[in-house]
Length: 69
Image 1: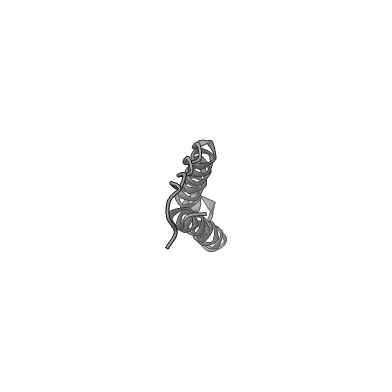
Image 2: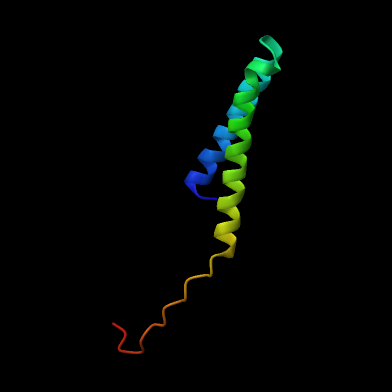
Protein backbone atom coordinates (compact mmCIF):
# COMPACT_ATOMS: atom_id res chain seq x y z
CA UNK A 1 0.00 0.00 0.00
CA UNK A 2 1.40 3.32 -1.01
CA UNK A 3 1.39 6.43 1.16
CA UNK A 4 -1.42 8.05 -0.84
CA UNK A 5 -3.59 4.95 -0.42
CA UNK A 6 -2.96 4.90 3.32
CA UNK A 7 -3.89 8.58 3.58
CA UNK A 8 -7.10 8.11 1.58
CA UNK A 9 -8.15 5.14 3.70
CA UNK A 10 -7.29 6.93 6.95
CA UNK A 11 -9.21 10.02 5.92
CA UNK A 12 -12.23 7.91 4.99
CA UNK A 13 -12.13 6.20 8.38
CA UNK A 14 -11.82 9.56 10.16
CA UNK A 15 -14.82 10.90 8.22
CA UNK A 16 -16.89 7.84 9.17
CA UNK A 17 -16.06 8.39 12.85
CA UNK A 18 -16.88 12.10 12.59
CA UNK A 19 -20.11 11.26 10.75
CA UNK A 20 -21.17 8.82 13.47
CA UNK A 21 -20.47 11.43 16.13
CA UNK A 22 -22.41 14.08 14.22
CA UNK A 23 -25.37 11.79 13.63
CA UNK A 24 -25.55 10.95 17.34
CA UNK A 25 -25.31 14.58 18.47
CA UNK A 26 -27.01 16.58 15.70
CA UNK A 27 -28.79 14.05 13.53
CA UNK A 28 -28.36 12.01 10.38
CA UNK A 29 -29.43 14.87 8.11
CA UNK A 30 -26.53 17.00 9.33
CA UNK A 31 -23.97 14.24 8.86
CA UNK A 32 -25.14 12.98 5.44
CA UNK A 33 -22.55 15.04 3.56
CA UNK A 34 -19.75 13.71 5.75
CA UNK A 35 -20.82 10.12 5.07
CA UNK A 36 -20.97 10.79 1.33
CA UNK A 37 -17.41 12.14 1.36
CA UNK A 38 -16.31 9.02 3.25
CA UNK A 39 -17.99 6.76 0.70
CA UNK A 40 -16.43 8.73 -2.18
CA UNK A 41 -12.98 8.30 -0.62
CA UNK A 42 -13.58 4.57 -0.21
CA UNK A 43 -14.57 4.31 -3.88
CA UNK A 44 -11.43 6.25 -4.84
CA UNK A 45 -9.29 3.94 -2.70
CA UNK A 46 -10.85 0.88 -4.35
CA UNK A 47 -10.33 2.36 -7.83
CA UNK A 48 -6.65 3.04 -7.13
CA UNK A 49 -6.17 -0.48 -5.78
CA UNK A 50 -7.78 -2.08 -8.84
CA UNK A 51 -5.72 0.09 -11.20
CA UNK A 52 -2.52 -0.87 -9.39
CA UNK A 53 -3.37 -4.60 -9.60
CA UNK A 54 -4.11 -4.42 -13.34
CA UNK A 55 -0.87 -2.61 -14.10
CA UNK A 56 1.64 -5.00 -15.72
CA UNK A 57 4.86 -5.51 -13.76
CA UNK A 58 7.94 -3.73 -15.01
CA UNK A 59 10.35 -5.99 -16.91
CA UNK A 60 13.49 -6.97 -15.05
CA UNK A 61 16.76 -5.66 -16.39
CA UNK A 62 19.28 -8.27 -17.37
CA UNK A 63 22.80 -7.71 -16.18
CA UNK A 64 25.50 -7.80 -18.82
CA UNK A 65 28.18 -10.42 -18.39
CA UNK A 66 31.56 -8.89 -17.84
CA UNK A 67 34.50 -8.63 -15.55
CA UNK A 68 33.87 -8.66 -11.86
CA UNK A 69 35.97 -6.42 -9.71
